[in-house]
Image (tube, rainbow, N blue to C red; front, side):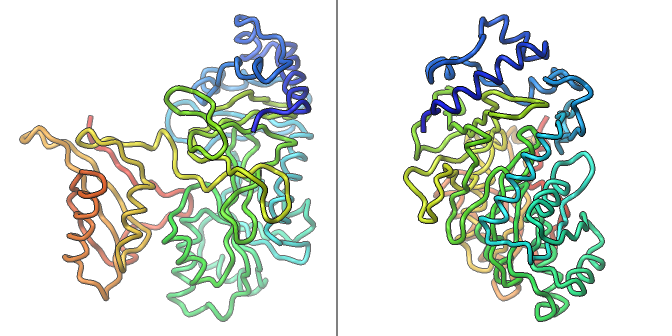
Length: 412
């Protein structure tokens, strides 16, 4: 999916705006002799940028408009290093709401729906993004934010919420609580719009079954507006990405080579019309592929496949590179095992070797010892690593209202 003439024109305009602004990227582009783009070849010569650049420009070094045009800032939810701060103009906020409203519409959500919003508000882009899209659509927003599960369930029942917006971790927690309390017949949910973290098929199937709803993946990241830049169609896994606002590439995360449609790699996004903090060729570190061909729904927006994980989520044990998605795939093959797990990696000084400990949940109907041995065998045959495995009852591992951390590396 090569960049088209209209998109090239918008990128050229963005580069000229950046150069005029004197911001962080202006200095980089001037040093490299970049003053615009005319062809796809010109575009592919522009260097990638990533979160490290945004941290180097902290706090507002990437701002490309005068101070009086900035109406809001947001910050990423990351916990390491300097935070990333993104300024927004009024147009940026409106464009974001327009994209989010499109996501709701693609999911079959209408102005008659009541949208129960549980992601956090504040500096994080999540809650306010879900709400702005809801209001643009004309639906009723129920802006709960995270936490206070008692209140969540009360409002869900009393206000007859029809759509739940949440991280997959919090959707799981709510599904388990509704199941535990026997409230399924009292809720009116029909759809769930889930974002912020990748989730396994086991978790997806459990949430859909226990809540009796259709689930939709919403995509986005703070650096590129926030959640709501793409969503999947009913019955399809591909997420439509709005190419009138964004240009998407897939690259080899090691070499940086642009990959053809259909091949998996790292998602790179260029903002075509963003004013406050335009980004050209931003490396998201999310792993996916562009699905070739046309969608059955008839929409012409390009499609990203389900996010497989992050290139920076990889962990290495005994010389083997592993991703959480591979762990989830193995657990999904074992009868009675839930979607929740935890991995602890440590170094045994006496034996001078790394140890990987996997804690997984399983239903009480299965034999925990046999389940542990089955998981060990699958790890050995598929990944050539044998972890220590502990099986615990479903509900033992902590649930999160936000993103769930699953891998804990205790090595120096």
